[in-house]
Image 1 (cartoon, rainbow, N blue to C red):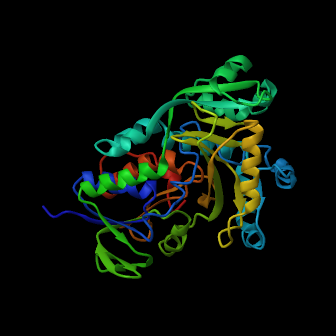
Image 2: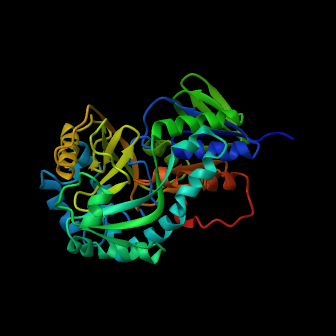
Image 3: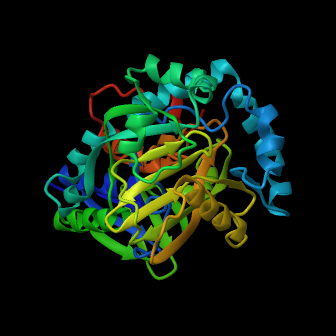
Length: 411
């Protein structure tokens, strides 16, 4: 029987997941990326498999807090000029999604996509060396006091609505759970049965090896154009071209130029992300920690700790902001007074942010052979395997009914 030929543009977690599931189903799959050794958004993140991350960045009441977030030297929000000026229309529309009814719609759909993320990753990685990087763990959401937690009541009510059980942790227990944590933090919420990736680069590399072992092919090239050619799709690269029956476009914020060509109208912008990794620290962190005060995610690493969690708009064509790295270091030292480390690594990259905080998943209305999987904001690693599974089922026309209308590229 003839094997269905499929190309995937973009080798982040969505592209790799799609490739593995399609290869397992007997398809002839080619994964195309301009730099397989690059460090995409799937690498540069907190590495959480965060099923509770069902609420958008903008929540009801957040709009009036934006000036404080912008002008505080320790605020997690950055705007870069002149790029910011060009995206004002996007941001104005983005702000309209902070209403209660829209946030509940977003949360409902993200809960569907992110549900049981740890087991989704284990299923994806089964039979590969990538399984060893998946860690089962509770998450801790820390606050300076219980009142700060109560002020986040709406966020937590949505999480409880979607089945997450909250365990309250008082100061003495918190000290034992997070050694070296500043005494300013006196309260936390724990959620069990979650997990994280202990080394995201090694994880992605091992998944790629698993994809190749299934017969998947890699082409390192920059894709310049995608076009229809009779009943096929032509992928034109800088070095070579390929003809396929179906294509998945999963190249993050860079998907936009192809998406517009094939009828996608969902506005998207880059939200530059940053992380700081400290190696050989004297703090032995046991679990992932979300700082509810600083809006900072902290993750154990094999030889240190990673700190991630800033938002910057308007920087697609600019260099990383040194002030962002300075802020991450200040926050690390304020959380863990006197922390010592031998070396550090700084990362910055572009997270694809849709105007309605929901990813684009599904087929083009213009050509049903062209499919999309991008725009996951901060939850790409968490939702990547399920997105890949959805796309594989869409292409192979499974009979299973998928609840993905809210992710429709034509919405």
